[in-house]
Length: 237
Image (cartoon, rainbow, N blue to C red):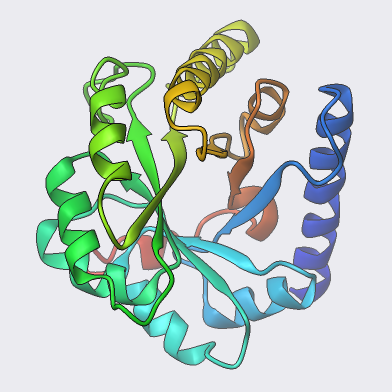
């Protein structure tokens, strides 16, 4: 397994570097977030041994259990799944980033519940850029007002946007969705110049995302292989 994960990490980092160069962007301007949902603590440990330090989790209890097993490692934890109101306190207490904030109520709870001795919680506003009924996220039209309100909350640091465009193999449609996200991001940057993060792109659309301006790409399958569906089937994790 170690050699497989090591090979995958090397391949993904090479692809990110090549896409970054093709886009004419600076070396190191795209961060790899390893999506470790349904993956074991041992797999995260192996990925860390390959140089990865940032890990994304969707399921709160699974993530908290994993964190307990990995306290000896200097890891940065990102929550990237849907957020229920009754789960905000442990998220505020244990994570460094949250990519999936789509409502002011959730942002306010995270702000109120962020421990004072921790650095501000880094926040990405999730935008439903493809306007899919099945997807979470505010609309592009709602984003500017919501971003202003979140940016004013104590205990939080609004860093940028997160999008999950519709799944498609059509390169033109991939690029169009990511370009729309980048345009919205740049619009918000004009008003909130501290924004620096555009979280978009996964294993299936990594290249288009980087070419259109992603600063964080969220990669799971290409690093760890096919998902562990047995673990994913447990709704409490």
